[in-house]
Length: 335
Image (cartoon, rainbow, N blue to C red):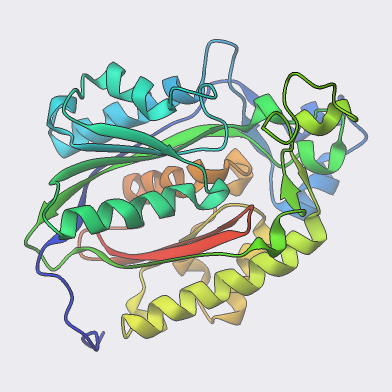
């Protein structure tokens, strides 16, 4: 790997801890075949998904976030009272307000932190990393907790077979600390484009469709997506995001130990890998176990990659995501 064309910061946001939490309840493809007109073969062929974890009535976005956060804090060797910033990327918050991050703050005893939610759909965790990176590199803060968490099952239409097979629940978290090191977040770049407003959405309830007015279609409370159109856009922007990262960081394919993409569809992931000439060993895929967990998918995958030894200290990993909006982006991290 050659040096970047411009000087990077001497102070970097280093991942010092990580953790994940998923519900115990599992919904298999065979289970779904008893609920809607589908089959294990149909789902696996089109998505790569075999199972997904589903939150119980007692499990919420905040409880899953808190469990993941506690694991990340333990690995980092710090207490919640040391945190200065908490960001939760989610589109299924604990409630309209207060933010899920404030519930996590209370659970962790992080009284000195400021906390907020970030709604960037599947890109929420990456957006959060990019924001915290700036505060840490500038010296404004030293310790931050970034979480991606979703309970998508709670806004899934379980009668709509093309979408209900896709989604699952879970949370992942990382602790970022400011350190004078060569490792850490090396580069972040985020994008959005309004061309996707009508292709992936959950319309109610918001100011356009308030609770005070009857819905013209009761299914507006559920997620809806145009799978084909999203597939086409996702492949394009994921490839361009990774190419941008490699260009800006002067990286060759062999310099990258692992690419962890948002787990939206195994066909998209494999298409990207092939077109960019990454080997199977360089692409992390765990969608078969969890389905699409939106903002939670990358931190859950990162936790698995670290725990399984797929990543080790000093390795270069690229996170890349694409979600509703559209939103997309990537982070380059030296672990």
